[in-house]
Image (tube, rainbow, N blue to C red; front, side, top):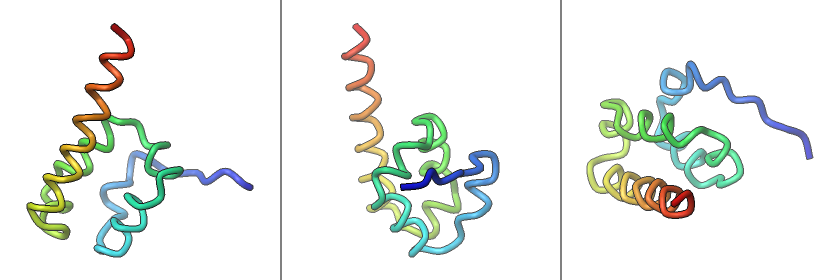
Length: 76
């Protein structure tokens, strides 16, 4: 298996299609390579919400929040 390089600086600009977002979020291996802070930025962006809708966006945000809380609980 080869590594996939993801340019995090331009990730938000590169995603412009619902199918791309679904493929990204659905691929845990790639999605988890993106730092949590950048995943929040992506999901909270106007572009993401406009493409995916409020319900989907809120679901992803809840998932990211749970992941962040889990990391904090593990550290403490």
